[in-house]
Structure formats: C-alpha cells, structure tokens
Length: 450
Image (tube, rainbow, N blue to C red; front, side, top):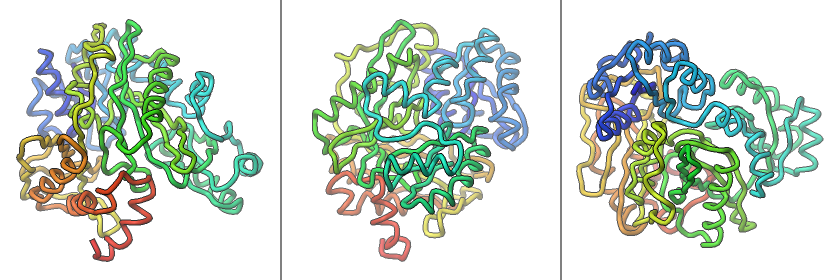
C-alpha cells in the first residue's frame, strides 16, 4: 500500500495497514524523510523536494513511487491529491487499486454544481441557487432572483477559497473577479455559482460507506458548526438537539445520494440545517476520508480506514445498516500550529516539548514527537484530540481537562483557544451555529476576555 500523504493521516493509514496485515510504503517529501510516518511504515520513498507541488501534489511522482515500490494499492488520505480524478485514473491504468471512488464518481461529486444537480434529481433539497454565472452582470441577475444575502462559491472549491458572503449588489460586483481569480489559482477552475445564505445554520454531515457490490450504509451524522472562515475547529458526533425526523431525513438523503452517484468507498455528504425554517439543504460531497472521521469511529466502534482498505480490495462491507448503533458522544478538536491571538498566523518551529493528554476515552491522532520540526510548507495541523463519554456534557468536560493537560512548547498552538471554547457556557449549553465562533466568541477572546 502506497500512502500518498503525510502527517497524522499518513500515520493513521500505517496503523490500518498493520491491522490488515498489509505492507505500508509512505511517500514523503525531502522535508518529511525523518517523519513519524516514515519511521512507522515498512518502507518510505522520497518523491520530491519540500515544495508540495513537486512532491505531494504530483500525480506522476506518486504513481512512479507506487510502481517502483511494487505497490498494488494507493491510499491518498485527505487533502493533496485525494480528490483528484487524475490520480484515480492513473491508478486504474497502472493496475493499482485506488482507495477511494472511481474517477467518474469523483468528477460528479467533486463538482459542486454537478453534485447539486444530482441531489435535486434525487429529490434532495438543495436550496435556492443558480447555475454557473459567467460574469458580474449574469451574477447580478441571478442574485435578484435568489435574494440577498447570498454566497458566491467556486464550483470546484472547498475550504472557503473562492467563497464570499454578500449582502448587496455592490459587494457582488466588487467581489466577483477576486473570487474567480482565487478559484482559478486554488483549483485551476474559475467557475462560480450563487446560493442563498443561511444566517442561522448548523453544518451537519453524514459519514457513508459503500462497497463495489452495491451495499451502502451511513454511520450517523457529525456536527461541524464550530468554524472560522469555513474551516472546522471542533466536530462532534452525533449532532444533538435536532428534530429526530430531520436527523432521519438527513441520513436517508446521504444514502440516496451515494446510490445515485454509484459511490464506492468512504465519503461524507454535507448539509446545512436552517434553524429559522427548520429544514435542511444539501451542501456538497467529500469523496475521501475526512479529518474528523475519528469522532464517528468513537461512537460506532467501526474502523473507517480499515473499511476503506477492504472496499478497495473488492470485499463487501463488514456491517449492515442494522449492525450500526451510535453509543455515547464524541468531540474532536483540531490542534494547529497557529497563534490564535495574532490573527491565526502559522507558527513553524521545533517542538521543544510535546506531551499530549493520556487518559481513558481520550484519543490523540498525531505525527508529532518532541524535537519535531514544524515546517512552513504544509498544513499546520499538529494533532486531533478526540474525547468520548456517555453524553455531550461529560465529553466536553473530558475534552476540557484533556486540553488543559496538553503541553506544547516551541511553537504557538490553538490549544488555549480550543480549551476556552469547550469550557464556554454558551457552547456547552447547546450546539452553536456556523457563525457563533466568529460573531459571538472570538472578538472578546482575542481581546483577552477568554
């Protein structure tokens, strides 16, 4: 198995390969040759220099590494090449099993406008929106039909790039070309469309698994509403405080969409729940394993990455829908090397001290060790801390205590922010909206109130 990724997800896949009795080969850049993933795997191969464009983002180099290492399968992890159909196609051409959906499915699901069309045809609510808008004038016409405020979004996008919330026609005219340029630079695709903006919403996503034999199951839902600039900071499973009928309909919609797409592998179907209207709309499909998959593993007892490996080998799912039950509550915090009180600036450096919390029912997924060099080349994720308890209040309290014990020196980290968020009475009282962190918490916290 060639692991075409780095960091904590590469370590995570090494673990799954060991459990499945598969030989693991980690593809690393020159900057990562001394990484934990490289040390933990059976082998590692250097695919290029530190620059991601010449290593982790090179389809040709990853395929060459797989062939040179005589790997018969490739796992792309998340990020980097994980949703690039070209990698899936290259694997197929070389006779290498790709751990993910086929390229044809990836193209249908990865294009947000195309995925909206599939969802709408399947009877899944997609909310008011537009087809592709070619220029500012076309966008203004479409916006009048949808109504303000609205969102301008990149069809090939994600992570907030090429995205803007707009309240007036003037803002739309001013932001259009900038958004298109951002989308082109980030994704090589400048297509944009519009969606109605939901001012009070929760971001709820459903984990799905589908094998090549037509079996599809959901593993319940996660709440990912604690966000900054559309980047998730804290995730929970299950999503509490929603109407049971809404939860059932969201789960069913995810399975229906997976079947419509002929999906194969692990994936996530994302929705927004409109708290003012009491309904939900389809958002997008992520055709890969998610950063937050551990919270689902903690409440289901299922190893999602091992399921991915079995599916890629042509095996059926190890569970049916009737086998899956959600037990207790899990919370995940993403710990990044960032200075949260200084505009979340990245904080590269060397970890002079690294002591994660050690406790029953706390899991830490990481690639870090004392002395680890945190480079400026890649994503700043240091670790994921996941806490499980019988209910949400207990899980949040366990997480607070765990973060309080996390000792990180040598770089700034987001641990102080995460600890204060989970200890905040408003957060603990009930799940928050997607705007809560930025609109109601960060301002006073940045000023020293937190």
